[in-house]
Image 1 (cartoon, one colour):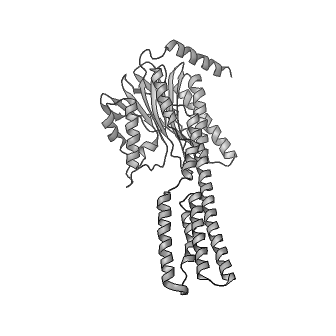
Image 2 (cartoon, rainbow, N blue to C red):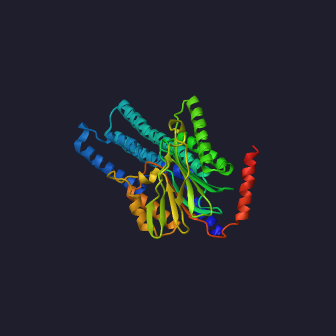
Image 3 (cartoon, rainbow, N blue to C red):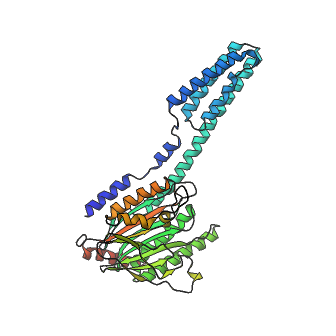
Length: 403
């Protein structure tokens, strides 16, 4: 079982985008050479014929100098240089054939060279800017992927498959987080979403994520874990305010899973999970929803943990609002519950694959928020040694306690 999960994780990691791919896409040709230069030849022939037809009263060939500037908008540097070279040759040849004074010829050649040079320069600047944007954008996404745990994850209590899909667009890099930690008190799971977009949102998410990794092992109660996360987000907001950044909150769902048929949940303003069991899918009601992390001072009610059904063989699906708030071309929201009903009898991996593909089809590939989804199932008996897992978790808890 473990070997299979590791192999699955390796396959999914190999599919992750790399920085070079983003940079290559930024400088890739959008029009093939055959189409570009074939069209250029036809345009040149048309202009030359018109120029000859109109005679010396109206010279049309010099107007070709605008072509390199047009090609620089969508062409590669090589394509733009090729077009500019061709246009210079045609225009200069036309000048020589038409005759005229030396200064008329010299001024025409200089103007043509400058216009073509500006077209090539514009193309260079466009591709350089696009490459820098692609590098920065992909670096932020790669940072998220490196800090978030690779999926799937197997603990002594749960098997967690998942989908994580950042949007990779300028100023729209989100702060979705998730983590699965095995502790002396069972397996703790968090999924969360930081308010806003951008690098600052990622920072707030990582502050909550780091606090969860420690508190999940150290704190005996799930509410204690939530309180530790609250403190971490408040500290991060204090630092952000000192440095001029916007303070942010984090919606989060924190779960505690042991060997029973129920799961503890502390909901900090997050979406309720969905339970897929016996061929049906239904929302799991959460009656004790508290304010998001970082906003506890606005509420007089303490956070409490409630119990949810999680029988053997069921799949508990937790997710961020990138799923429920996805829209199609006419602005309609994604009908999650309706679609889940179609896949309720499938395995966790099959449900996630179907959900991811269906979201892409529904939105037409245009998303405005990150997507994070975890599909949790109880680990099969004997998949890991509970004694060894418990000893490892206790040593980690002791190490944190000695700090």
